[in-house]
Image 1 (spheres, rainbow, N blue to C red):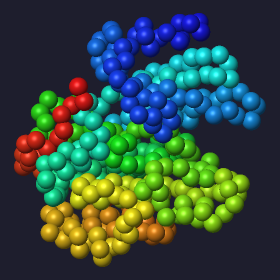
Image 2: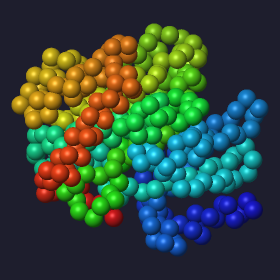
Image 3: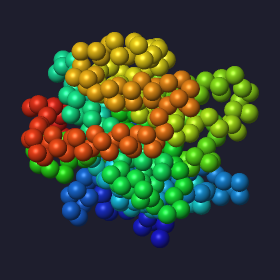
Length: 328
């Protein structure tokens, strides 16, 4: 059994190339040898638990048992264990979003030398992430019906929202429409009630993480810093990057409401007061002053309806060449 599990990657999937290490392990682009579909295979080494055995990684557990089949959450197709006890490696097979990620999208727009991304895509991003975070945080399956929630849902925080972890999935042949945006890489995710210490990507660390620098390491490792409003901060950082095509990095830039609004004053999306307020409030230093997930869902639902009218009834499209080439 061990040998068959260990060779499953070679038997069922052909690895095309390896990516750099992610938040939870080594990822590879592969092709299913049966149906030729592309997948991403991630090798995850779980942490030992108190009983000195290996526990199933949270990323695998939560995507398999809790977050299945939501359009704005990356799809885990299958997983298996390989290796001897206490040295187990999990192989997690994810869908491959061939449109790439929002890092690719932003880089593409930088190369186009276009100053502003169209407001249609900005509104689409807000609506799509409202859907993803509404589900993660509040168990809302459809932001148009926020009163309908998943029974016994426990709030999950992602802890590493950034352009490189938001993927573009195409379910339509034309490339002048809007892709589905899927939030992926749950290597640092946790139930909010279990959140201790902090993780994420430098430049996107919410300001509350700075408190850890003032504490002894042992105490910081047992202190809660991150919450659902920390995810809101990182959501705002990505929103800034999309609007401006500038890299968000709070290590070198101080993002204040006046400076942000002044910088994007001549951008079309600046005419939407709701989006501007969402941007500036999401990046507040004080987590209590940031929008709640419920507020994001309300704004996202409004924008989702607008985007549907603009694309389905008015026929508005993205400009030609708006997206990078598919990854293969």
